[in-house]
Amino acid sequence: MKKPKLQSAGFSLIEVIVAVALFSVIILSMTQIFKMVVDSQRSALATQNVQESLKYFLEVIGKEIRMAQRDNGICSGVPDDEIYIISENAYGHTLAFKNYYNQCVTYSLERDSDDKQRFQVSRNLDFDFISPAKIRIDNLSFTLSSEAATAQPAITLNLKAHALGQGEFKSEMDIQTTMTSRYYKEP
Image 1 (cartoon, rainbow, N blue to C red):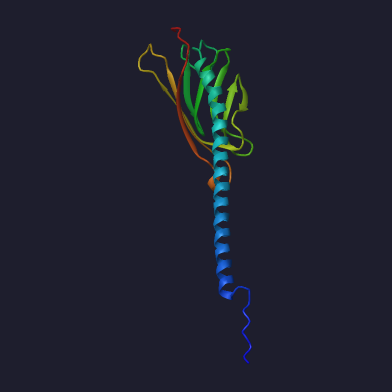
Image 2 (image 1 turned 120 degrees about the vertical axis):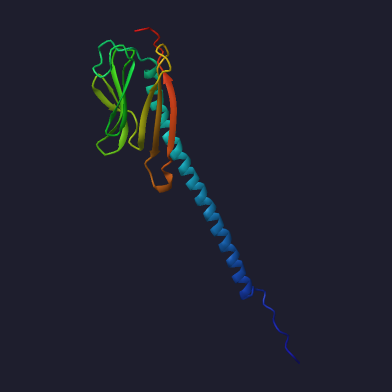
């Protein structure tokens, strides 16, 4: 009498290899998706960081520019009966004017002790950086425009900045805005 062949209840080698291959493909796909989500979050945080830092700077400078007054001999760099004067330093444009509190104000781009370009404000020769060290300002320019002698002068600010971080998480940003003084008195 012939013995019956015993059938094993396990998996064949081909079935195990196919299962492991499918499992590997699924895990690698999930890992790539997770990495993409983490990288997207880092980029979004870098962009948010730059926006918040620049928002603070724009609020500070916007308020002072709107409240600027004609100089009456108080600020040495600003001609009498002028509101704004734009000049240049080694890093870009500087904007000087007399603010509402009769202080001589200068906004410029300067290097800090760590050799990073940052916004600097000077009020009556007291200097302070108003942009955080983790944001680099690459370009700063001011443009003064007024169409007629009686028109309000407008300051157009152009800047380019990015977050200091790893390679793809620098988050560059270009901003342009125009502000005018609320000072309406004739010279």
